[in-house]
Length: 265
Image (cartoon, one colour):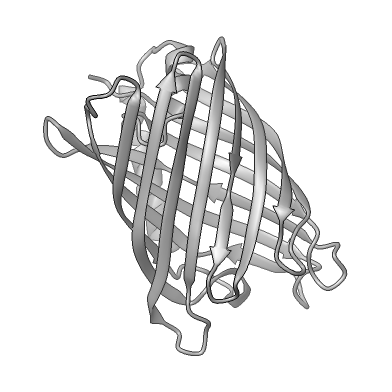
């Protein structure tokens, strides 16, 4: 299943190349700050977390492939499909180093094209958890489902909003713990001009089964740039865990490269 998903994503990228327009870098950066814009984006996010494990010195290297694909349903409504596929290398946390793919999360945001309020947009729908992990340490072994929603207000150079979901397992390996988690991501982005953006967010997760929070904050800088006829965005930043589970990470580094495919309409 993971290989089929990757093939489908690569096919989407190739088919969208011809539709990539020559849009202004600032406009693309503004759309990129909107989780449910009409912009097709394919981010490759690279992360490193330090800490955790039995000696509190574990290393977690993980890459997330996070394609965002808007699909027009009617003249008034769209559905935005957001998929997160993680790939990890973990050392000094488990008895042996682990390399492989984690579980996939996919969200469907049904969003009106015009909310009736200038600069305001929203979307809501279902989120799904797929047990795609290739190693037991990297996944839950469970299928999950739950609601998800996002709200966003863009005023001048500011983009401020919140993304949230709650996923509960309904099937999977019976000997694995149930999944019952809430994810909250408040975020703010400020446009610096020339396609540059300074962003901050929390990625707070509450595990209702273990009754514990994980609350890292991320501060990142990004810039949209052309690569021939293809627009891209690169990003760099840091992360600090205000709250972390027992034996959890302490801080981290984030970078990324995003392929941008503007709506050709």
